[in-house]
Image 1: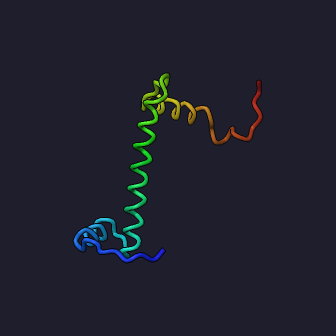
Image 2: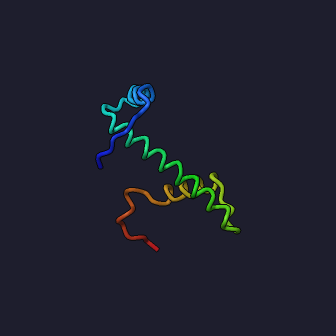
Image 3: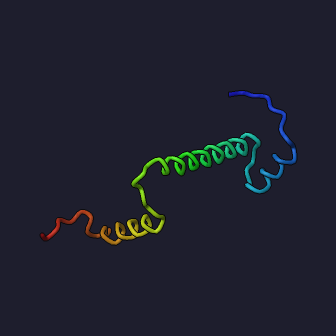
Amino acid sequence: MRTTLDLNKSLIEEALRLTGTKTKKAVIEAGLRELIHAEKVKLFINARGSISDLTITADDVRRWRDQEESIIEIASVNEPSNT
């Protein structure tokens, strides 16, 4: 979509410098992606409060992830179990 914008030159220059992005279009798109991501995270966090019996902590998720990784061994994924 083609759009004409009057942007703050110093903000664009700083964003280009800090991110190493080569074009104004790329830095604006990256900024929009970050803004969308941040808003989706807020929506997710706020939705968690609406589920009354959800009592999951970040440590719970880490334990589940670590447990899942320890259960699945690369060499045994395609091998039948001996049970």
